[in-house]
Picture 1 (cartoon, rainbow, N blue to C red):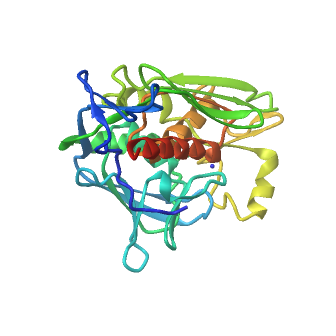
Picture 2: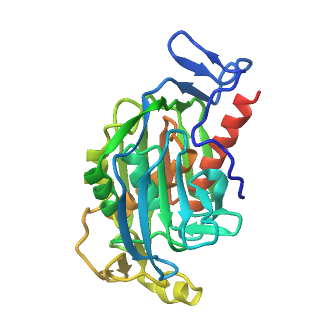
Length: 329
């Protein structure tokens, strides 16, 4: 729910790094316990063919069309505003985050694109490292409120390997971002894992959790089937008593019972749910999308509770700044 656009799509070791015998790259030869480490990885991937989706933006209410296309190695995932003069590029990178009010917005100069988290989650979880995303409006379409249509479209066109390698990095020391009782953390772990908890004062939601591990090999490669089945179908949700206020603030102009779950004191307004804990799964989906702004999501156990796009992106920025500090040491 800070704009510098010249960063590379993937972290790369600097001349100060040291490649060890086991393939691990130490990011800090002077520190006894580096915060991050890099490891050799498989090649990068892009789409086998383009695909197109159209729909209404959640907050703007504007109907937009997106064409997601293959991109060259090391280009990363990036948006192109085809409706604006000179068709500016907006990188899907943490350095391009401009605001996080009820969605994640990216910007490059005067060009913005909002509510990018569902599409980006689908791309990273389906193993797409490089993609050109052409969009003719200011906000990605919400579709049915989940990442299901995005993921299905990616699965349909397929993903192909590229010649360039994609180094993976891992968290070596815990990183915590907290605001009151809400937090998000990156904890050292042998494989990539996500755990998300939420707590709402509504009986139909209450306290619920969900955990998901993409694969065992510290990578998203091969995780598409579990993402399609367990995470992508989870829809965004809202609280009935907040709707009028949000609309008065110029938000959720495109929201409806067709693209969002709505919960009130008496229960869900538009059941049935796809999962008993669908709201927690959707928050996990948002976290994956926001962490995709790192280019490659580092191997860690990402643990969140009552968090938000703001906390997600603060964690991503902290990890990225730590990476830069250590490779430039």
